[in-house]
Length: 98
Image (cartoon, rainbow, N blue to C red; front, side):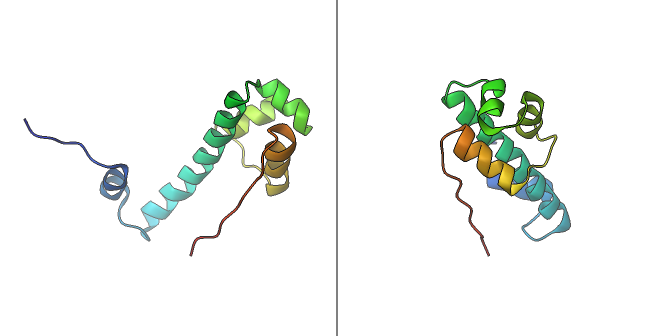
């Protein structure tokens, strides 16, 4: 029996090309946006909060939180900071990778 298991990196290389290619850069940009929404959603669920409760804590509405979590809406850095710090009680950390 042949093992066709691939790592995520191998899958991405195969389907989106090597790092630095146009297709790969476009994929990675979209992935980062998706990942941000997923991280917010995961933290909210871990805290046992609804979207409505999170929205109320950080001064926005449920629809806006839903759009961020589902990668429909881009989020401003200042808003992201409010969501993480005021809404979730966490600390936002950013990194620049060169």
